[in-house]
Length: 100
Length: 228
Length: 271
Image (tube, rainbow over all chains, first blue to last red):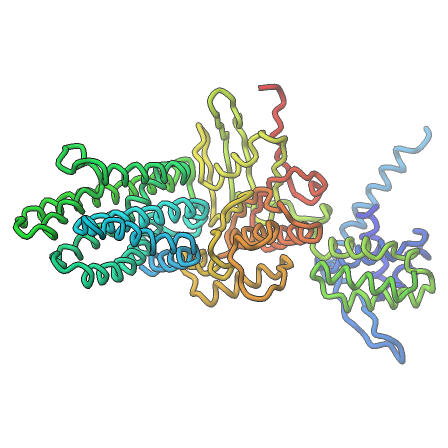
């Protein structure tokens, strides 16, 4: 699940940069169920460490500063490759599961 | 050179913190000196030098044993084996030299009818031989206890054996008695000094070789390792 | 647990693991504000969450990690060692690359320390050879320190072997000791007056002085309290992340999932 979660986070960011809570909401809206903060932030840190996302802190209007995440070029490339692999994988699984 | 000096410096720091050893070094030769000071005062010179030889050898024995725990790590850190034992010897010789100064002065002012030049020579040679003797014992014997027993035996033999016997010549500090003859007896010839010097040189060379060879063996670069 | 209590405990655990807490705490606080739910629900216990974040920061996970590449820094091939009639090591192989941690495990008497000493070059095996690329640091299970020298004097002595000037050697030693939670005490006691655990920390620091490429650690955590034990493994991972090859002899199996590879010396058949 961990590996899949990382890729889904990359996918969520493909729609534009975001911050922690909002990423969790995007994932939930995308049908992945509610992702606990305790699971999400370690994933984000991993991706940052591996250079697949870059971050910066933005001061909120009248609110506290937030850490924003966006895809790095490597992140975009990894996502594209993973998406392609995943599509092939899903296609094969579907073919396997067809009742003749 | 600076590595050897660093080893010597740290060895000196270690010895200076071992208060028991320092007290022994300072006072035991004094006890030996005064044990003969009454009737047979001329034996005081020989006894005090035996006392110095014994305590310095003991200090060297303990210094050598303590060093064993650290020496493999020092080798891995880049020290050459000879820097380790030469540095330790230098520290022990320094301690010995500091020790014999007050004792020489004591003899100088306490005993009038002895030749003080040869006395100084005896003390210097004792220090020279005692340090490598103790280190060699620590290298050859696994534990301090065995080394101490050997030292006890040697000192006892030095005192008890008739120096004219052949076997007495094999004792490491035989030269103190030999040169002592010239120091104490007015009509003795300088051949005693010569014989003493030769004996001391042989003993010194023997112990230095033992220290060098055993250290080099123990800390050698093993053949099964290749380092790139 | 109130939000403030949770955040305080979270920050304390991060600091405990030598991670600057400010950004992580701010992010968690913002998330809690946005979601409006209890911190235990969202993140779980603060210490466990801190641990998983630190793991992610330090890269202790096995997914997405680059496999070791290139020539190993330590390669031991077919090591055999006999003591009298019993064969302690029977053709053991070990290879460790830069940036790798290998744990050596096995029952008492299975030859773990012997293997490490052979790799360090302190013991000759009956057959087999060891190739090392770079310099070696070795931490024995006990010993390795001088009773009558202070820690500073140890740093100078070891540093001089590598040609380091005194002040630099002292600085490096003190910095390394601080990462192991060196107790702040007045004055500089000689090694024999240090507690067992502290003396072993000195031993560990000395093994790492001079930045060796290969570190051979023989269960050096004897006498460590729990916190120091964790600090020890943090140091091992810091060394790993710095590109060193680290070998740790251990019998505490809970850490095995943190190592990159495990060498099990337990004999398969009775000798």
